Image (tube, rainbow, N blue to C red; front, top):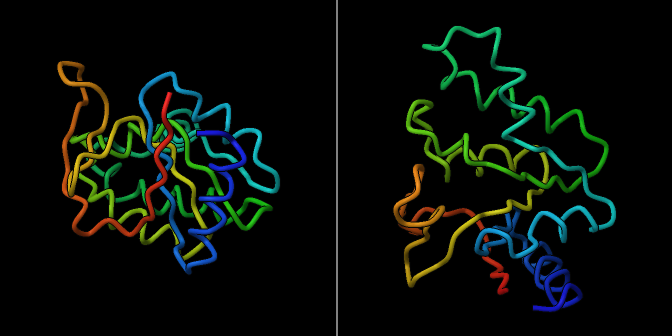
Length: 152
């Protein structure tokens, strides 16, 4: 999908009163590059920024504190739209987070565009690739987001 079309799809989702957009595509399709080129957005590299903040927190408390830490990171950013990139940590079973509830909670602070590495299949969404550690298949039933798919 052409970057102008992708940007229009994201803009349309926000105009339709959605506060979260998942930009879904396979690994290496250019999601991060496209998102870095969007105007007037702040970017949080969750896989890099969140662990740095969680290090001083005891491991047993990290799951319950992760959302508060991420909320604070997002709240302090200048732009009204925040890109969440490299979100795999939020799906890590050790944190025991409900990703849809987390995105819903974070979207109360800022509108979100979430880079999602995977694909949509009907009423299910896949994270990662089959056979690779961290691969998940989840229901879209409680997903608070509009979905924009990025093809290679």
